[in-house]
Amino acid sequence: MSARIEWPKASPDAYKAMLGLEQALEKSGLEHSLLELVRLRASQINGCAYCVNMHANDARKAGETEARLQTLSVWRETRFFTERERAALAWVESLTLLAEKHAPHDQFEALREQFSEAEIVNLTLAIATINAWNRFGVGMAMVP
Image 1 (cartoon, rainbow, N blue to C red):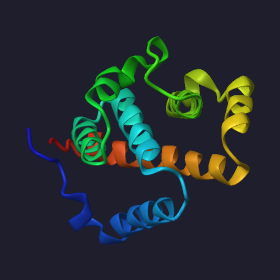
Image 2: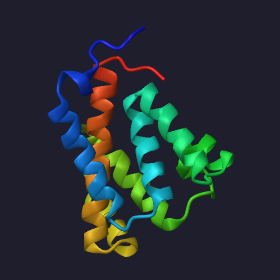
Image 3: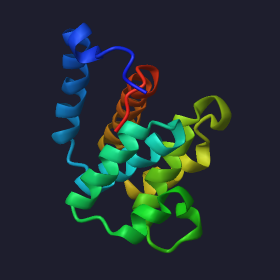
């Protein structure tokens, strides 16, 4: 399978806008390891092979353990993730599956226990951004 459209070349402005979101996330103060878990989990849910491959590799380079990477899709069933990460992963799943999950109030309250308001906004931006990347990856048939 080959990519349907090389979208960064077809619309450099769209690509530049996506990179702008990534630049904002770099300045957000959220831990790089947390951002990679967020990106990887959303990409798993969305079935974006290109993004799963990229973010698993990026997480490894950043020092993520194989045990955590191998069990990310079943994070609720392990003890490998902190309460902060668990709150973030639940939020990732709810916002990625928005039509199904509807961002439950109890999950938002769990976020408030672990994150400041600014961090919640930036975490939500990270989730929105990776979901947009996933739609380009899947929609344009990008492969690792």
